[in-house]
Length: 115
Length: 116
Image (tube, rainbow over all chains, first blue to last red; front, side, top):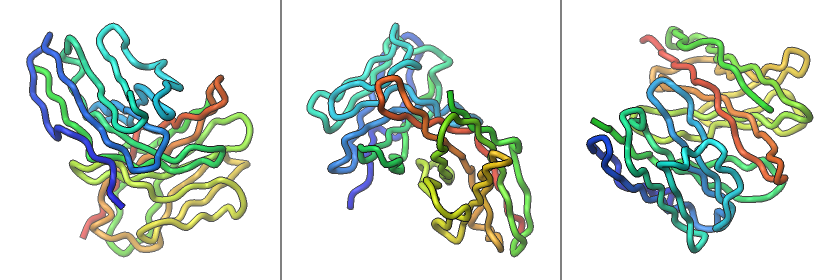
């Protein structure tokens, strides 16, 4: 079974530039998550999709971050314009959906450095 | 809202000795708790979860966790540590959203260092 795929693995941009990250979840996983992990901290949920609908985006800085999952499969997270404090690892995860507390499967992450 | 706390930033243990990584939780209702491990430059990997039933949960790589309702704890344990267990460990709890769906809240992580 293929895991969660993310690209790029690394990205360096200057502040005020824009950047986009891509994620392809495990086949059949209806729920997709984007997390931001700042060095030394735990992952913080940015946005959660169930199929192509958003179920939680309460911690997404909507003035600069956006995400979509148009066909209920892969997803794109965009930052425009980037700030220095956006430097972090962006993790994508997926899981089955249902009442059971299913575990999440994480991709390798994209390490973003904003200079 | 649900939350988890990992009181130790780092735990050092000698190879072959038992290890414990601590996690306490605050939930309303039944807790659904998880442990994940993160190796350098890699995403998080699922280790084990507690849903209901036996308080001792067994997981991957010889890890287990003990659920203690009275102490609201879910400590991760291993009888004999390996150098290869050195990594960052995260405790997580499932939180119900107003929509009736769920999200997961992670602790701040504990770095485990196993010394040869």
